[in-house]
Length: 443
Image 1 (cartoon, rainbow, N blue to C red):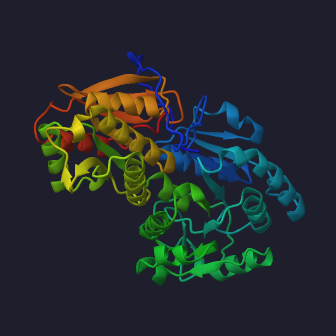
Image 2: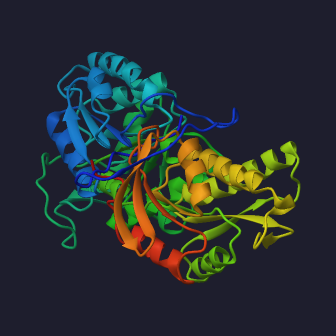
Image 3: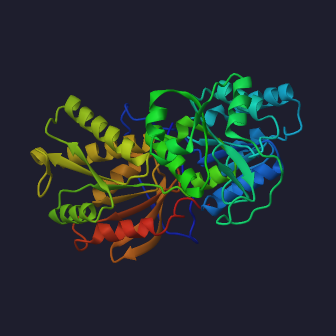
C-alpha cells in the first residue's frame, strides 16, 4: 500500500480536472480516499504525545493528538497523529493487553505509514511490554530504539543518559530525574524477550549502521550523544530499510531527527524534446539528482516490464536514503532525444508514467517535477488523483500544483512543457522544491 502525504491548501486554488487512467495490474493501487498521515505516534501519556507531535509540527507536518485509536480514520487530513494510550500507570500485563488491542486498530496503516513509539529517556512506564505488544501484533521485523533526548537537557554519552550535560543543546523541561544506561535499556528489552543488539557511538560515527542492519533483523538499541549522532542514525537506517518497514522507538530527539530529515524528489523527463534533455544534463551537472535510466532497447512487453522494474529498483534505493532522482528514458545507453523509439509516443509515455507510479508505490518522495505535459497527465491518471490544484506560477510557464484526491493527495507537482525554459529551468525547479521543505507537509 503506498503512502499518502497531507493535503496542502493555499487559499482557494483553481482546479484542473483529470480523466480516468489505466493502472497496470502489476502496479499497486489503493481505491477510494487515500490515507493521509505519514506518521502515527504511540505514547503512553498525554505529555509524551504532545511533546513528540510538537517535533513533527515544527518539521512542517500538520499534527494532532487523540486518545481514541478508533478515530484515526477521521483524522486523515493530518500528517502526524499522536495516540495517547494512557497506559503509563498501568500494570505491565494490563498495558501489554491494551497495546495489543491498539495494535489491531493500527494494522490497516502498516506499510503506508511510519510508526513511532514514544518513550522517555528515563525509561519509565511499561516500555518493554508495550514494545513487545506492538512488535508481535504488527509484525515489525526491524525495531530501532534510541532513548537519547538531544536538543534538551538529557544526553547519552558512552551508554549513559546524563541530565544537564551539554551546553550546546537548547533547553527543554525535564520530566524526570531518572537516568538510564544503554546497558539498562538492553537488559530491559532482554527481559521481555526482544533480544536487542546494542549499537555504539563508534559504530554510528564510523558509518557501520547500514551494514549492521542489512545483516540481521530484530531489535537494535542505539547510543547517541549529539543531534548529529541522531541524524546519522536516521540516515544509516534509511539506507538499509524503507522508513515504513521500521518501528521507531525513542524520545523527542529521534522524533526531531525524523521530522527534519530531508525528503527526496523525483524528476521525470517525459519528453524527447532536445531542450528538456539539455535541462536534465544541467540538473545532473549541478548535483541535484542521480540519473536513473529507463532502458528502452527491448520494447517487447517483457522487456518494458523489466525496464520499469529495474529503474524502480534503482530509484527506490536512492530515494529511501534521501537522494533525489532524475528518471529519463534511454536507448543504447544514450538519452532519448529528438524522436521516440519506433515513433511510438504512446509507448514512451506509458512506460514513463508506469515507472513513476511503481516508484511512488514503493517509497516516500517530497514532490514531483515533470517535463512534458502529456507525460504529466498520464502520471496524474496513474496515481488516481481526482484533480490538481494550481498553487502558484514559480516562473513564466512553470507551475507548482498539488495532487488532490487519491493515495497521494497533497503531493507537490511542478510541471512544464518540454520545449519551455532555458537550460537551467530544471535547476530552478529543484532549487524551489529544496528551499521550500514544508511543501506537501502542511494541512
